[in-house]
Image (cartoon, rainbow, N blue to C red; front, side, top):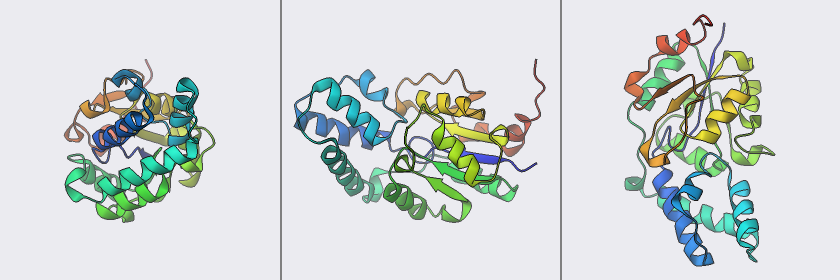
Length: 223
């Protein structure tokens, strides 16, 4: 039985949510709109197109959505390239390496665009561990729709029932469970008050995880 581990990126591999928030709140200010923190955190896990389309519709913005997205991505990449701004989540590299050594297929499935994904995997020397990567631009509908995770399973040549997703957002957990996959909810305070109750297990540190624990989720008898 070949198992597949599917990782979200923002808030799981890197602690980047605060930087995303700073960029987006700067744009809210430029646009002259007020988005509450709760409203803002509710977009966690969704792709740029869905987020900014919903905001544009709600606030009846005249600016083209694609122009807003381009501005956000440009601002974010500038910050991303300043090493001090982004750090890897403690223990995630060790977990990825252990899963790889145990024969897991490993896929990255993130709402972020491909240039950001490629930069992060290269910057933290994680390229060689991942069999495939999928960005938010590669799917028609973002999380909580399961499309991104079903595509990840397909690329890994793995049945959804043998996949486990590591997610830090409500939308991501919903997408994973809708795809028929196991899910680990990673509690990241910087991701806001995310409801991860639908995850199979929740952890606040990668030190709480091991390959044996993850493999056990697939053999645990149903009650």
